[in-house]
Structures are given as structure tokens and as C-alpha cells.
Length: 406
Image (tube, rainbow, N blue to C red; front, side):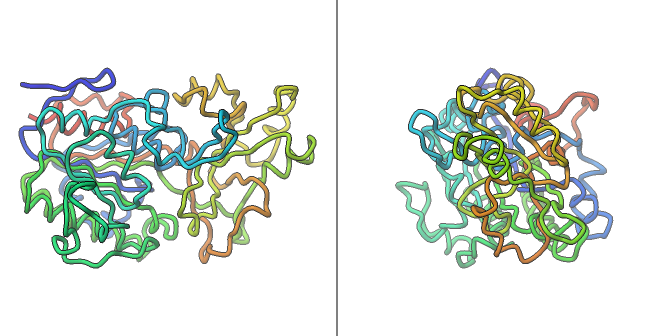
């Protein structure tokens, strides 16, 4: 059987349509609660007759690093995308990591297309589209800008007509439903060999597992997955990260404002706190997550600063650049002198004055730390002799879909 090799891993070309779904923010308990409540009958059947494990996402547990890990089959140390946002030390500017220029490795999607497979990608937010579709011949568009597609740029036109739905609001569950609806329509109309669907975590940021709105979302998802299954697709479901409540007992966000503290401990402006959760869509999380990097001046006492940060209530880890690069498989030149993670209920901010929390209409739920690293990895096929003790990763999704299905 023909194969492609990408980033040191070999993949068989698909013999049947293969769909990998990244459900943004899918803490495994969302599925457990929805299945237990009878909201996901298809998933309940798949958990019984297919294969499933609890896997780990890459750190930081944010959207861009994990989506790119899934489509490259490799950690950030290989593909270079170590956050949604970084401090470009060469040009002395903080920037979004949405441009393919930051990508250091080819994607499996591009390799499969080059090998002759028809490939389709539908992502909820346009911020991921250019990264996921980099170097790929095929269909690649976002539900956020589904009304702006062209055959020249996106490999398809008239998406709204195909799907039969209007462009959804970016802050809505409809943004993700459009992804699923488009996936089903594409499978019926064009039957691509490989399809990658990536949703948004708007629902997960607002609603805990087992709540009515969360169950409604997973019931919707279950229906579309059932349709793809009926069309003969191999389906792998995973997530880019989990999600947890990040609040004090009074319901307000439990925040450590690192930049304010560093400015107290040092001369203001000497240190720089970077929050890699930052993206263009901060209304539902206020750019607050459980992971931050700290850039220190050359003369700083790094050991003393590490100890001061580590002593703060709510801090989980403070790692040096080298320690973080090794433990979290990160590119050393794109992280700070220190990498800091918060405990399960704690988020990290820069300066209090820089965070607009007026959009938080419900208690904060967010991600980024080790406590959001567990994610589902589920396939609608039985995999024989699966090593359940292995450390499975979300970026094993395509390996499951292409290599482990007879």
C-alpha cells in the first residue's frame, strides 16, 4: 500500500473516507455527561464497539499549537507553533501566530494532497485556516468567513448555497455547527478522501459539562457524526485541549497578574509577560489562561525570580526555558526565559489594566495549563491489540485513522 512520510512518521493512504474532528475545548467529561444523559446515542454506541482512550494534548493547552500538532503528527518543537500569540524577539513585537511563516514543518494534509488524495478542511475560526491549509491543494475554508470563499483561494465557491445555512456569529454555537454541517455536505457532494474539521470552544468557555447548553451542543455534534458514519467514513474525534472553571468562591476570575507583580519586584517595564492564549476572540476568556511566558532582562537574577513566582498561591510550575522546552516539547527560541503555569482554578494575566473582562457574562472557564491536558481520542472502529498503557496524544489522531484501521 502506498504511504507518505511526514515529520518522521509514515501514514498509509486512505482506502475509505477518513475524517478527523478536533472538538475545541472538549474536556472528556463533556462527552461522559452527554452520553450518560442520553444526548449522544451514536457516541454511546461507538464507545462500546469502537476504540477510545483518554489522551494528552500538547502544552500549552491552547488552540493553535494543538491543531497544528494534530495535522503535523508532531509536537511544537517540530512545527514551531507554540501558542496563539508570541513575542517576536527579533523584531521586538508581540504578534499573532496565524501566519504560515511561523510554521516550521509540513502538514500531513499537504502531503496527502500531494500524493493524490482529495483533502478538505473546515475550521470554525479563520485564524487557523492559513496554517491548516499551508501548502495544501484542496478545499480549505472557515465557517467564520464562509461567505468570502473563492475557488482560487479556498478551493471551493458558493459554500453558503452548499450548506444551506447563513454565516454564523463568531460568538455562537452555530459557528461550530456550520463546520459539522459543511463536513456532511462536502462528504455527500464530493466525498473527499481525507477531511479535517475543527470547531470553536465558545460553548465550553461558557457552560460546564452536563449543563443544558453543553448537552445541547453535544447532541447536535452527535447527529452530524452519525451522518458521517452512515456515509462510510472512518471518524476520529479528539480535542485541542480541555476546559476548567477558573474562579474564586465569589464567582470572580481567580487571576494572578504577573506583569503587575514583576513591575513591583523590578523596575517597571524591565520584564515582559506574554500570554499565548491571546487571539482575536477574547470576549469569552479575556485573554486569561493558565499558561504564561516571562522574558527577563539579561541582568536579572533568574533563580531568585523563579523562586518568587513559584511561591505565589495558585502557581503550579515555574520552568526555565530549557526545562520547559524539554518537558513540553517546545521550540527554545519562541518561549520566554521562564514558563509559568497556574493550578486548575487559576489563570495568569499580565497587568490588570490590560484585561477587559466586561464581556464575561458568566463565571470564567479557560485553559492553558496541565489541568486541561487530558482529551478524548475516539475512533468508530475497533483497533485490535491497542496498547492502553501507552501515552497516547491527540496528534496520534491521523495515525489511528490511516494506519490502524483494516
